[in-house]
Image (cartoon, rainbow, N blue to C red; front, side, top):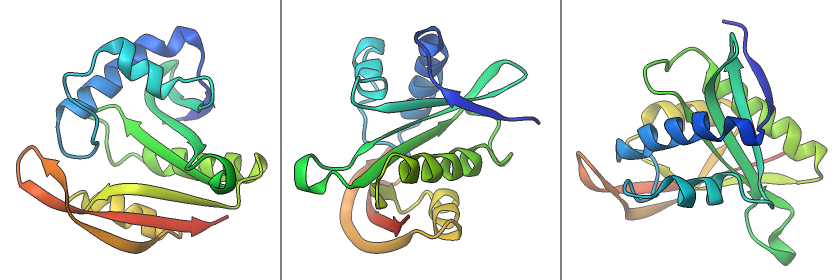
Length: 162
């Protein structure tokens, strides 16, 4: 699978929304409301102050990520990102490729570190991948996520310097 990662365009909005909606509806990785509308979702994912990218294979959008400053002002040197892979095509290196791309972009944009504020502890594949890519768990947020299947579960704050 040849993967191309590029800046998202307005024409990608439908594909991004489809992935966003399917991932969030699963209720196991993101704190977004599963009943969120397309307009609300795209207003977050494709906001003007957000860097939004898509991963494509054979012209099809198979993943997306956004990146932004984790905090405004005096905390704006730390990036934050979120990644979504089209359901049904996991374990093909798409998430890894998007994260590696985002780390390069963050550095290019002048960020000094990247932080993930809520990584759901039961999302073992993501936790392991982020650790392989140099992220450390800095803290555990007890029962911070309402998992659709498991109820209240812990979440991690993960960080790495660029």
